[in-house]
Amino acid sequence: MMLEAQDRDHELVDRVLAGDREAFAHLLRRHQRTVLNFMYRMLGQRETAEDLTQEVFLKAYVSLPRFRKEAAFSTWLFRIAHNHCLNALKGRGREIPASSLANDPSNPDRIASVPDPTDAAHGRLEQRELQAIIQEKLAELTPDHRTVVVLRDIQGLSYDEIAAALNIEGGTVRSRLHRARMELKEKLRIYLET
Amino acid sequence: MRCEEIQNRLSAYLEDEIEPAGRRAIEEHLSDCGRCRHELEMLRRTISALASLEQIDVPYRLTASIEGGVQARGTTWLQRLTSRLFFPLHIKLPLEAMALILVALGAVYIYRSAPGLAQAPRPPAATEGVFRGTGAGQVAGARRDVDETSVLRQSAAKSEVGLDDQAEQEAFKAAESPAGEEKNIAVHQFGLMRKEAPSAADVATPLWEITLKTENPAEATSRIGEIAESLGGKLVEVRDQERLILTVPTRAYPKFLAALKELGTLVDIPGEAGAATRPTPQETLTLQLRLVR
Image 1 (tube, rainbow over the protein chains, first blue to last red):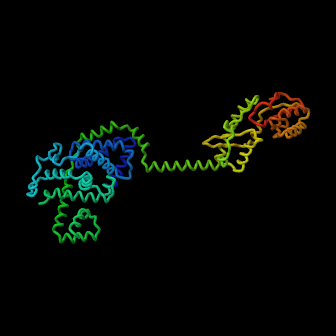
Image 2 (image 1 turned 90 degrees about the horizontal axis):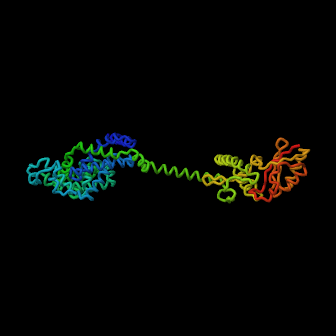
Image 3 (image 1 turned 120 degrees about the vertical axis):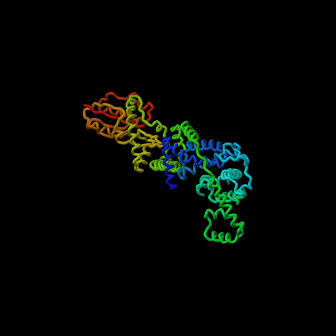
């Protein structure tokens, strides 16, 4: 199934390179949601995520002639997205302060105030509030750890796909993922224990 | 295993990435350790919570904005140009390597097909590439330029099919000989200089023509051959029993004319007024002598 999707992507890439812009619209519709959500989980701000998603696809369009079909198009797209993300975090100071997430007006998970951890213990924490907290705790991870958690546990990529997208070894993916999960577990413990 | 070791492997355990023996060891530990079981449960909840995060939808304006950006940048000619410039390396490199090998093979082939190439001195006349006559022979020389162009082409064609090495060596020697033949042909093509010995066809295209009125053409023919040889020349060919093709050393040309006058009357003598004294690029003249009664 995955190979079929990959073949379909490669076919669309060939059509784009042959001058068929409509084929790029197909690629966009197939992958825009994934890229937008990756950006959103990495940056925590919807508006910024949308801006960067646009940049990623325009960059992909211009760079398409250099795309080698050794990897899946989606993996290549994630690599571009990841680079844009890191640049945004480094260059633009877009590292989202943990305390600002819950009050970001563009954040659909926005909650009126940071919930009291004891509410969780009493089962009073709503799902929407929990999601905002998870996003907040994600932002506290280092970009490297956050990336592997987002790609693996939220986007569902395989270790190999993550390694290819980030251009790192599979062992590095595993160790980063382990540390990131352990760190998140500690950060969320108070909200997840019943 | 200690609890710390177990907990460090829980992430891999949940991913089913532990080998069977290690997995059994973890499960044995978990069955006895409530603390590690709790940590495993917390890790499961963490991963589950991450997976439960809602996906945000793509607003239509974002899709439209990206498509608009692509339209604005969608100069397909630029993409095609970029495609050519930045051909994927896995395609570009083999192509370049193949081109390099072909060039190298071509160079080796050319070098081997011209064994004297490295050693052969380059005579000044060779750079002109064509034979040029003087005086009355100028027009004929111009005609020879055209003829020799075809010879050069033939020569190039020969070089494609390969020449016999020995014949080629002889041709080189003949061309470089001090006595000299009347021509050197240099072919400059892809750095190749090729010289050829004059062929019978070349010699049979005389530069100058002389008419000799004589009572006995047959006897004159025999005598003329002897005269030419005595002067260092040669009777090359007799055509239609009345046209003789000869070579005569340029310096002996006056003597040759004088000897001919003893055999009959000369008509339209080219270069009579000091052919030997005028500078000529060749040491041997090729003549056509017409015998008339």
